[in-house]
Amino acid sequence: DALQLVFGIIVVVLMLGLGAAMSPKDFKAALRMWKAPMVAVLCQFILMPLISFGLALGLGVTKEQGLSMLVVGCSPGGSTSNLFAYYSRADLPLSILATSLSTLLSVAFMPLCLFIYSGPFTDETVEIPLTSLVMPLSLVIVPVMMGMGIRHFSQKVALCMEKAASVLGTIFLLAALVMGVVSNYDLFTDHWKLWVASALLMPVGSTLGYVNARVAQLPPKACRTICLETGLQNSTLALTILAFSFGDTESFGAVSVFPLLYSLFLLIDGVLITILFRFLSRNEGIEDSGNNAEGKEKAEEPSEQKPQSRMSSEAKAESVVSEKEDSPDRNTSVAEHKPGHFASVV
Image 1 (cartoon, rainbow, N blue to C red):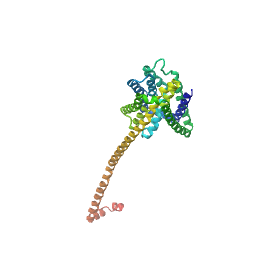
Image 2 (image 1 turned 60 degrees about the vertical axis):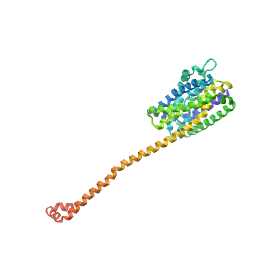
Image 3 (image 1 turned 120 degrees about the vertical axis):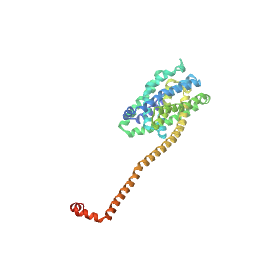
Image 4 (image 1 turned 135 degrees about the horizontal axis):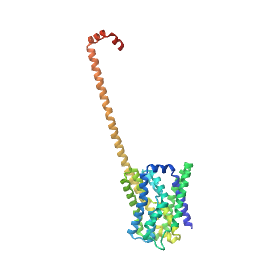
């Protein structure tokens, strides 16, 4: 199918770029500093599927719509989070690492999450076969490994691949959104519940991710990173899985509405969160500079006391000299009684 082929190519290119941003050293660092990546992965595969499941039940959407919401909620983190992490002054290496880990672990966790939550939204006619997950998820693992291998041999080529994948992914999402609106205009305008769910999924997930990171007592930069990693899902992978699950154009048009709307609000919410985090990071910088200034003042206090002690010692020396000058006879008698000692001093 042409649609499946297009989505497959896009996913391969994006995952090549993601793998090109990683190296085995990054995974070794994750083992040493395990707390932040672990919190990010747990938020990704526990909070987001649960939030999407709750929204689908609470809003009372159809089975097709609920299943598409679950696929987005169970997807790993998207590479767009790396871009927002950079502009949010968050921990960019942690963002790339968390995205890569969640992508690799999605091979196991995504089918498990869909198995747990998809019951109310599946029947004989509406379901996601296991075979429909195998191909898209295999398109994730192999390119990521290839990208890491390319980075190992040539960092320049890996950097070019990473930038090209980011640009291609943004263009693809915008093109898919425009084409989806044009071809399914009535679906986009009639289903207000999907608009509400799309607008709420990322803010709710990001907020809970940030709260959990704070509870885990992670640094502010790591908290901002996990906030973005939790709320930003790989909607391209979700669309690919739906394309493999619903082959005919009409069925895919119905289930693709939510991922495309989510992609739209992803950009809007991501920009708003980035502006908020940049403001917070500026306040953190002011506090840090204030603490540094206090530290410098404390460090300068002993140095101000040293000149006073030096001046007092000099005053004592001057008083001794003046006493000697005032009593020349005493100095002379000392010299007469101990001529050798006086000569050695001179």
